[in-house]
Image (cartoon, rainbow, N blue to C red; front, side, top):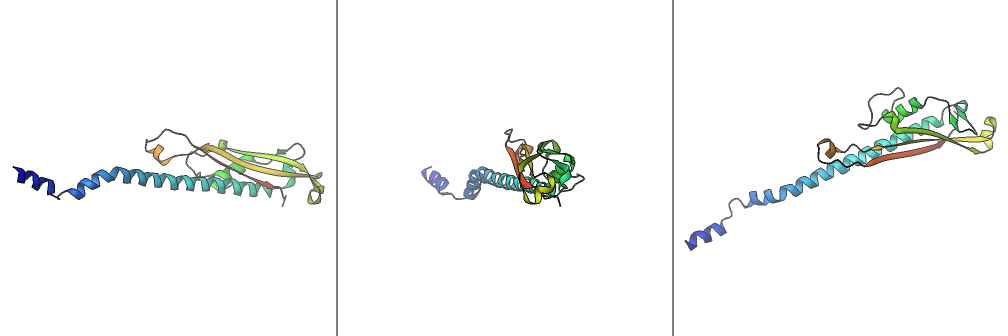
Length: 162
């Protein structure tokens, strides 16, 4: 009987399968964490790119769409929001799932300035495009987490009136 126990304890058959079964949960967690981290970085890049491009576009609109010192914008806010969210002036598929125009704000500030701004009353308008919304987690889509993580960005540019 003692030799059978010794043979059983020294038996190496199935050792690799047992090791794999023990390590697999940790490998899966690390794999999903890597996917989630990469998706977060990609999403953040899309948001930053969108607000930066929209601010640059809005800064090149004609001066008559900006009222200073009242700091108002009379142009199409929806066009700027579409450009931010989709990369197109007319709208389309959002760069990030769940990102809507309501998550994007366009604001204007005015500063007293001379030089090229003398033609517009010595005020230099500056446009700011910003966005903030809940990050659409990959794991959340699979039902693993209910946590909400905000993601956002903003970009500002002086109006050139080109």
